[in-house]
Image 1 (cartoon, chains in turn yellow, blue):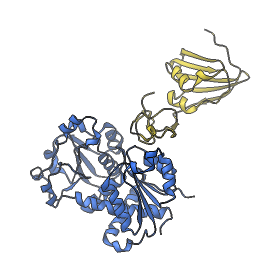
Image 2 (image 1 turned 90 degrees about the horizontal axis):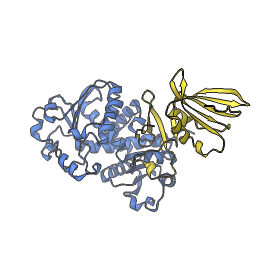
Image 3 (image 1 turned 45 degrees about the vertical axis):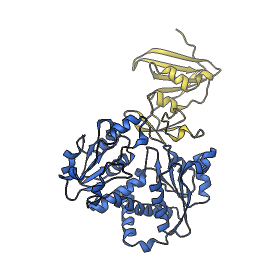
Length: 140
Length: 311
């Protein structure tokens, strides 16, 4: 299988195998007009198997979403066919409008204009809680 | 500009701040005349989007005893919420009329939204099954006045430990003091949620025992905190009726209790404490109500002082 190299864009590497599609959906990549490639189950010396996403445009991506769905990924920024920046992404402290609170008693269920904010409660177990009602976020 | 201090969660207050409020409440109890004009010309807005007569009256009595005035509403139907106004807008509007807000709301997190939008201090007077920090302050003041300390004791919680937010809050607040031990007495269906055990008790290293046996636990207790099995927390009437009488405290059950046990209850009670116990000097639940007013006075004063509204 051959995926053309990108000239200007982003490569999201080291995505745990199986999470690429979820990331694709959450980042809204289906709405882009440029080429987007998802490589599933690629061989990885570090991870065994991994997913990779290549976006053929230098667009802003929500790093919080990436960190939430797939912490420890690497983001490679490509310009003019060259790797110009490599960023490791960790677990974000706060998530704003990435996931929604499912608690029917939460104020976010009735006040539509409120942002859905989750805070990292326990980095070890990767537990996030709603900033308003403290409900634990469901598994990604 | 200095950030406004609100009270949304009991853990918004440091141990030092809680100790300061207890000290202030003790002084109010000892010398009420010193405080009778402290809030003259100031207004408390009680925004009660669901009825809670006792909590509202406690806040109102607290403000009146500080020489202040009260405006507000006692149910959502008589507020602009019935016209669809958001909590954020209500908070902005009421900030124009009042110096401090006490908000009760059925939705969890509503007082936090109010605090984010108000230009005066906001006190959470209960948000659904989530927080009720002034009840916890009343509980802490009661324990302190009865025992002279908040550390080194065995506290039994009995009844609905699953939905009882007063229990969760008090456990969270007490977990910051040393030498405590908890005995958690409840039916299987209403046990303390595992997240409270994990996040609070285990993190703080507090020893605890879970049991269904109220009488067997009695001799060990310094404090017995009874709770009501609340109808509104059940989705199913049958479950409520089956469990509501599980733990009823009677004089017989106190046979083996310590002579200086303090029996507490956030009230209202249904029948979980027999009325015969009201005469027992160990019954503290009506003192708790009174303490609630005094600690709310101390809190209103503290927040208004920090906001620069009163001296």
